[in-house]
Image (tube, rainbow, N blue to C red; front, side, top):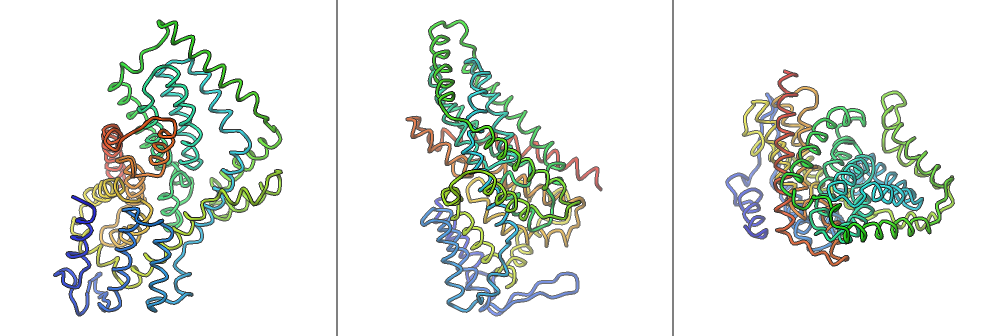
Length: 473
């Protein structure tokens, strides 16, 4: 179905005043003995604005930050919300965490740390195709868990392309694999992927809780995905030891990469300070329950300390911060906060998600697979922000222990981004970088690899969550 057709049907049958699901006079819900209602004239405008913003973001009609803030401005002009209330809806904890980590990663990139690691890994591969896949994937999954996914692929993909092309291999599989693995790795921690940052901030889940509850399914998914790559592409992973010409060319290529790295000036003091601040901020995340310092405060604190300690141009570092992403988050928080205040979120929960019944296994799997499939085609950031109040309502109707439903939302939103080329920022960036190196990856070429990987990951997550729930009940 064409996206325009999908959104048209969604608007007609769900949010249109003519829809039988949306009575003209008012909507009334029951939560136990409590009635929750809101007048149609108070909810219609925010709903229409939100749907239009979502369409603009999903179809990339305009910049996503512009779309979100334009929607907010429309609601302010129409007096649906006032400025003070709008600001109140913004989750500054999430904004601060993103700002702090973006700044730290920007400085760390200047230290040459990422380049050094990539060159060392390239040398360890010795030109073996399977080692190229495995070793770079291990680095990608580790970096993505504690740093930004996009930063990780920006560093890894160019060297992977250079190595594979020099070995006479088709680099497409290797590029796609690193994009997918970066999304898998980012699922493991609070700071690994934006949906986790949002969930952790809004729900109050700690850094340690994310690691303890998501490390196992991420590790299992990573192992299964690597095995899938090996089984389905064994011909491409044959060693080149028997081909002297290829082996010689690879050795020359590795020597060139090593030479280029040696020409780069590496300030060891700069590197030590940058890594020290990164390790310290992760330590603050891990000891949050003891120090009572929230991740957002910890990230901005260490980012500012790092800018004082190292000789960098602060203005240039701040220019590298993705301010459009931060504004996008702020706008979405306001839009969704208004919908929640008007009762629209509760209506969606009770008319769509609540109809799955009260079986906890069904509820968990619906959130997981629903999040996974939707996040494969739509931006998982606005989806996650929208789903958080819905999940809260689902938990009121069907109490599920140990935050399992939040882990289902996290796994679905993060792993689901692997489904298509447009499902995650790392996918788009990786394909774009490959194109600049004359490696063209089509939507279907990406999908043929990414779809099985996503299904495998979601199946593993389903088994993990089901077992976790069985033990908890």
